[in-house]
Image 1 (cartoon, helix red, strand yellow):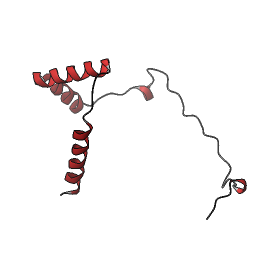
Image 2 (cartoon, rainbow, N blue to C red):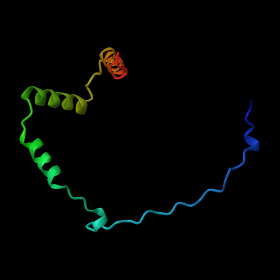
Image 3 (cartoon, rainbow, N blue to C red):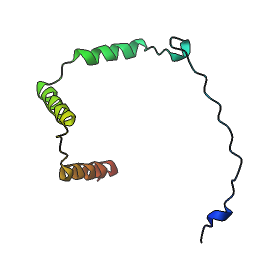
Amino acid sequence: MRIDPTTLTALSEPRERQAAPSARPGSPSSVVSLGAAASAAQEAAGAETADPSVTTRIARIRAELDGGTYVVDLERLSERILEDDLLREGR
């Protein structure tokens, strides 16, 4: 089968999109508030201290990313992707 671009026709006329109503800052539609459970969970997460070795590793990776020197081990990455795929399939 061959498609001839000179004979293409629109299936229907395009409709104009209606713009969403814009919310002004501070209006009820632009304010989000957390429930008590979410606030408690957020406080609990902030109360825990991260393992210093993890914090150090994250700082090192951020510095390498900022400096443009971070190198991705493609062999290791591909192995992890395959392992994850096999685990998701239940093998």
